[in-house]
Image (tube, rainbow, N blue to C red; front, side, top):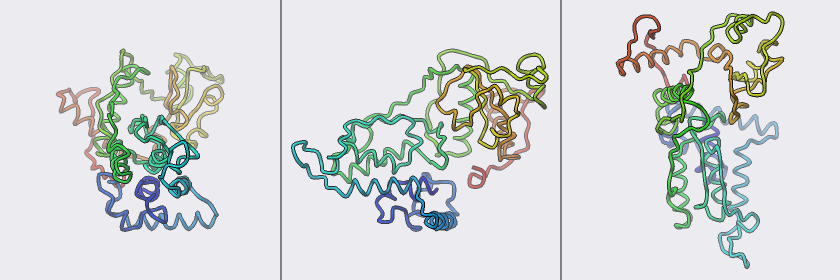
Length: 334
């Protein structure tokens, strides 16, 4: 809420203080910010305590930096100066074209800063996928990018186009096979079901070739894991991992608690560190055990049970999904 709306929104840049007032925050649309609709006064009070702590330490955060840069850029005029015929505010950094990858990891304030520092904002090229956001605290939607361009169009007197010329929805995945993509598409479907509006609704990714489904390994010990992976127990030795293999864990705490035998000869990454990298084999270690969620996982199982029933699949007997229904509160369980 702080990074995406209170300080990191485009509207926050227009305020003298660089952040929304409580009244302005409470006016943010529900579709844009659905998670704390009934608790925004409490969120605002928490943010005020954070600001007091930050000032006491003499510190600043990324939102402060973006707001400062934006103010410096906007202090200059838009009148053409000199032989370059560029506006004064662009004399120092005449950026003629900007290509932004992974734009879903940027705030709207950061994107607006890119827009106002570009000689031709209509020449921006943005790519991203809201289902792959890994920067914590960001609520990015391409709908908001369209709104940003509309408002810049009004502010600039028509110099910036009112909306992106065209939004291409890329659905063919060239990096992996359908065995993994089918699972990834179900995860995205879960996100859209439990948190509608949190990510852009796009057609599912399609793989160009088939492949095996991911395995779920139930290992009670390291030796059991050796048997499952290699077909034999290595005893005091360790599993050999090469450059094309990786172990992915949830966070730094999980990384530190990984068994020494696995850490010794393997590349171990958190989800954040592994973003954008490619490997032939990936071991996702203790993903559910290291999750803060416990009984909330029953929501997922219940959803899959209902999904199979809608599709006419058999859900009884061995391998069938059974779960006690559990209501999912979007405010408390995100």
